[in-house]
Amino acid sequence: MLKVPHVTSYLTEHFAEDAFGTLAGYEKKGGYAAARKALTEMAPGDVIELVKASGLQGRGGAGFNTGLKWSFMPADSDVPKYLVCNADESEPGSFKDRILLERSPHQLLEGILIAAYAVGACTTFIYIRGEYSFPADQVERAVAEAYDQGHLGPNVLGSGFRHDVVVHRGAGAYICGEETGLLESLEGKKGQPRKKPPFPAQVGAFGMPTTVNNVETFCHVPYIVNRGAEWFRGFGTEASPGTTLFGVSGHVVKPGLFELPLGTPLSEIVFEHAGGIAGGRKVKGVIPGGMSMPILPAGQLDVPMANESLRERGTMLGTGGIMVMDETTCMVRVGCVISYFFRDESCGQCTQCREGTGWLNKIMNRIERGAGQSEDLGVLLDIAAKMEGQTICAFADAAAWPVQGLLRHFRADFEEHVRLGRCPFTASFEL
Ligand SMILES: Cc1cc2nc3c(=O)[nH]c(=O)nc-3n(C[C@H](O)[C@H](O)[C@H](O)COP(=O)(O)O)c2cc1C
Ligand code: SF4
Image (tube, rainbow, N blue to C red):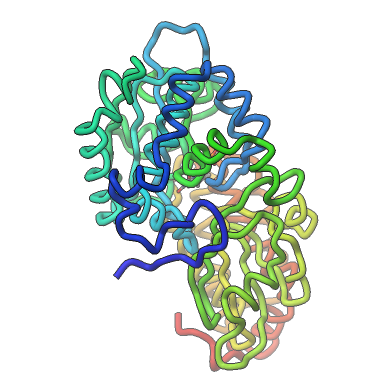
């Protein structure tokens, strides 16, 4: 059974209706009207300006201004230009793109068409995480329907604009979500991130100018074109407009996907929308945006879920994947799980990342076993600091930040393991 998200706004409004996933059902709800409008009534530059004015920030993790990113594509180049839809979604705790791919593949295709027209791309590659076989099937089915009805191909919607879409299934590696690792993998090579510059807008897929955007980012675009930048800015905060999809997992009564305005307090999401902590227990910590984002302690859940506010608390929105942990949770075990993941997924090109992720994991495990020493806490922070900002891609930073967050807010858990020579959290999850 597909999970139907909690509906509070526009993006997921029709997700309870299975027909919304079909071309006919999507068009019945006004689908493809925005693409028609953009392709027949607007100049590509006007579409870019509109998206810039809306303030839409990329929903793939970094929160970069989408319209601005599109404007980096060379406007007058005569080489083929490409668009890439990043559907790799491998960040633990994040599952919003999966639901979008499954429930509304035409919403995604419409956003892609508008973006492709704006940047002058002839082809879009939708790169889908290898494990997402049902979502990939849904997208392939929608692409076939769109070709059948003339919504893709040589004369999109009768506008004279040509566009092709290629669905590419990955082989299941977290690093292929990093945009240049993705491009390498798309080209049939090992998924190892590229040094930048040059950035993809200059040298991207197959050496051509390329824009990479996240699935959810594309899905917001038709609504902006239909309803305008001001309407979009009516949701969220001044710096972070729009709604976003918060995927809530962990020790809550009602885990699920919730579409809410950016800036919604984390406490409202956890205690109202996700029903609070299961079993009547107390909350201990919450990871606000997928596993690579530093954890927040129970006392800081009043934070508005927007990058500008989360940064003030030493963390970020990331992918909006909220992982809730109750009072029984051992934060050293959490550190063991997180550091194991990053050790396993490092592509190995950079010494700080390849070696650093291994050391972090080794020391975390040692502390959890009861064999840690008090100096180990400083060593963990020292390794994490030396991994930050030193490497080809941000994976090493993403591996360092959670360790820093755990030690910033839950140092007492680590000290207690060292003092007792064992893990004191007998009711915590098993490793
Ligand atoms: C290690 C790593 C993994 C990433 N994984 C993803 C991913 O699975 N999906 C995604 O959209 N972006 C991911 N990103 C971000 C992309 O590099 C890129 O910024 C994003 O796709 C741009 O889209 P947006 O501007 O629409 O957010 C990842 C970045 C890093 C450093
Ligand atoms: S930081 Fe890590 S994942 Fe990124 S390129 Fe270097 S070794 Fe590979």
